Image 1: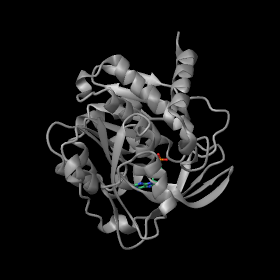
Image 2: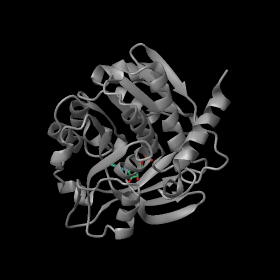
Image 3: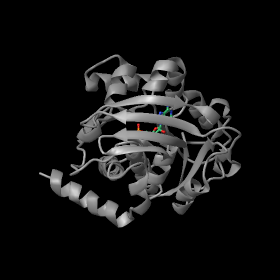
Image 4: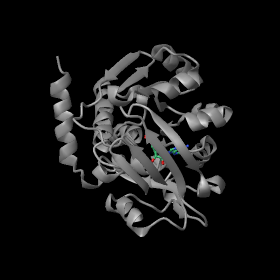
Length: 304
Ligand code: AMP
């Protein structure tokens, strides 16, 4: 089974109470693909600029991510900079430079057009939709978005998510998109926009899965120290979607409760690893055994 991912491939500037780094490999497409690659084979559609370094491409290749759909264009790679509050629960975006994404016209390689598994990671909703439209046949499709697009491209975003089976979104953005503060009500409003499965991510507090028939709450894994939460939401998405792809789930409505719950826990596990080092650092050394060990630890901490 193979998962097709579209999303930003970026250079990030990150400031946390633990330190600062600039122009490190990041981007929602990068984090989702790396996290999902521990569960299934992945191909990535996106664009980078002339400044994209071979050693950063090598990080993706080391994880066997198929880069046929990763274009290299004239100009600079997408750049994003953010700064975290002292307790790291809030983040302020300092810079978003779309650069090569501004004129990007995504092309899904022919060999991936009939993929049943599609994850539309955070990027302009019109690009997400164009990728969706190039795929054919029955699709299990979902994605992510963020305040930048909710504020700037709301109508396009609503048109895009109408086709999605599921959406992953953080709590602040779920409130913003729905106009409801209460998360149960917010999820209901978002379900009415299209995706019947809504996963609301709550940072260190975990995530909630909402389905028409009920909801499931997954806690966050309690880390001793959080170094850099950048990409944790995307790694959650990669674990969630990667696991469901590997399970061969092609219709979320038919997924069993244990499958959905385990997907949520794998999402939480991947999000927690991501926070342990700056940028994609921890994903570079991570092994599948580490993931399964933490999954079992999760079970011990939450079972009653
Ligand atoms: P997360 O911490 O899960 O929200 O994801 C952080 C990643 O999202 C960073 O690596 C950024 O490069 C990327 N990012 C930030 N803003 C945007 C945006 N407007 N569109 C797409 N990707 C973005």
